[in-house]
Image (tube, rainbow, N blue to C red):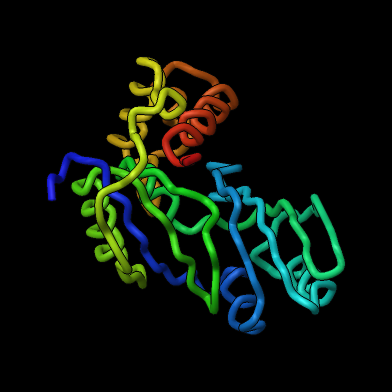
Length: 217
């Protein structure tokens, strides 16, 4: 396989035990959980912002358990039916997303979650996907590669292209270790290096990451 051609990989990844999504998906083994979207929210506290959909006959009980879980910072319901809820949640962000950003791969949402594991569809060149899997091994992330092959999607979509300034900011952040775990440079230090305010850089990074992580196929 040409390592520079677009590839599509399906990877099964175990969520950290301390996260609500791991606990709920293992406790209610028949629950249907889909991560519809996931992006960084607070870089300094490593908080992620996700949109989640859950379907289960004990939906009220599950909602209460999620709202009161120690890994949750903020919870708000977007849509609600008898056995289905879609909500926005801010929660502790494990290093998975930072690994994805660092290696330059795209996530094709939604991510289906079952019994503490999520199946992620990753799109990039074979080389970058290999880099991500190597990083997972180095960080002792519990994962298994389910499938990898040629991608039917085009990676040259304008929605995922960065401007020259955005590319410079991303490269600087990667090179200085902003996406390492633990982080080697703070948001404020990175902002000073780039000659920007912390709030401006935070907004720019979220915009950059949205382009470089989300894939709408």
